[in-house]
Amino acid sequence: MKKILGIAFMAATLISGYQANAQTNMDKKMPEDKSKRPSPPATVKETIKSGATITINYSQPAVKGRTIGKDLEPMDGKVWRTGANEATVFETDKNVTIDGQSLPAGKYAFFTIFNNEEVTLIFNKVYNQWGAFKYSQAEDQLRVNTKLKEEKKATERLTFTISKKGKVNLLWGTKNVSFEVK
Image 1: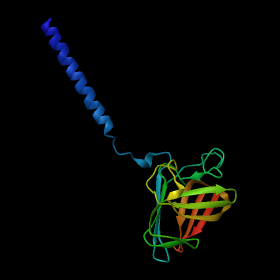
Image 2 (image 1 turned 120 degrees about the vertical axis):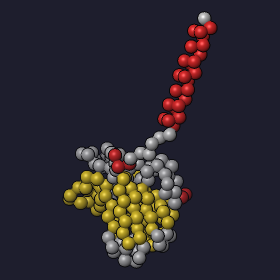
Image 3 (image 1 turned 45 degrees about the vertical axis):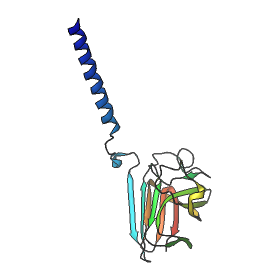
Image 4 (image 1 turned 135 degrees about the vertical axis):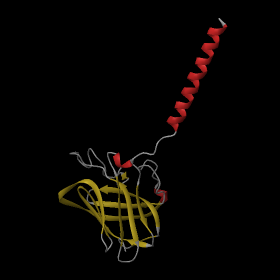
């Protein structure tokens, strides 16, 4: 009987040790390969005419036959992270102006609010956040209103471009939002 109890005790000890080790290994998550996400990461970077280097880090959702504003963000009147996954990050290494309004050098979460034919560009001081779930208007560094243009040709994946002259375009479906950085 003592032998059976001893074997049972040893088995219980081994099993609980194995379970603790398995949990510890699960808690140590391997780094995620973000390129395998449905909305992969993208970066666009340009040194513009003024000498400032502008970098935009974002994730590229795909339209996939859905209707923007109905099945897919941005929804009219709601803050959008202007991408997918983490908030889009707009970075400038020098003080610049956005459509004539001052933006100090730094990193910003880039949000937008679409309202019919107008878009509000938001540069928020809390750049390291997931989506727009904890967005706070009190942390906005700058808000700029610009016009929304509709294109004939659709862009399947959200795409940002920056020209040497400082023109930034956000292309998403048939939507084109552009603004000047100087």
